[in-house]
Amino acid sequence: MIDYRFDEDVAEIVLNAPARRNALGLDDLHELAAAYDRAEADGARAVLLRGEGPSFCAGRDISGVDPATDDVGGYLDDTLTPLLRRMAMFPSPTFAVAHGACLGVGLGLLIATDVVYVADTAKLGSPFAALGATLDSGGHALFAERLGIHATLDLIYTGRLMSGDEAVRAGLFSRVFPADDVTDATALAARTAAAGPTAAFRASKRIVAAVRDERLGLWEAMALENRAQAALAATADYREGFAAFQAKRRPEFTGR
Image 1 (tube, one colour):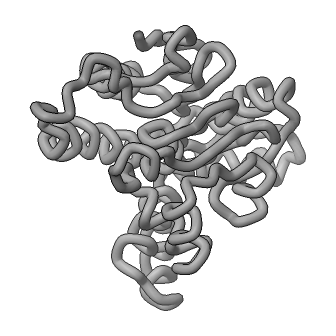
Image 2 (spheres, one colour):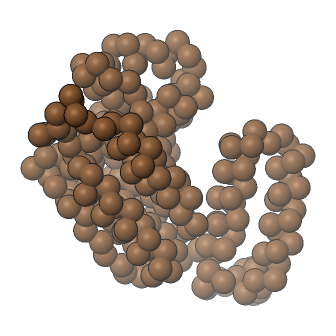
């Protein structure tokens, strides 16, 4: 079950099935994609994704799934991957709270989010070694890029889960907080971003994605920055930022 709330330009999307540790079935994935569509239609200047209860997301809900007839390839190609791509390409800043179990699909949701704040007690990774399956949801790419080949295969072969502290130290995610503080810290970051120059943030998000996906070097990335800066110079937020700086007052951005 996916809950949606919109307040002060922030779309809050909540995985709300704590009895099953927010494990996601097929219908849940469709609901989640619809929530991101709704957030964009509402003009959200930031998105906050979190899970209700003791865990963020324990992965795919496989209760009742018959492995003999399960079309896992279709599930991944037709539903999960398009959802993760939709999340990653959401135009405005996105934030997620990682706490408790963040496994399998749950890990993938975090990978597809811009900024992830992690509880020190979180457990991140994949239990797939116990299922005879392989890591999915982008885990291979993230782990290999940030951890290197040996550490990645160690995690995959052993099924060992990383703590929140370990994941942040390894550069997988943004910051670590005590479990009691992580939700408030992430919500504050989302509200702060929503009140900021979100047109500029959207430009930075596109540049970072291009650097990652196209393996751009320094001068190619700088050319993108230059073009983005020239375009932003025509926005109301750009003029407001300069005027506020010159007048020594707090800027009031509108995202335009």
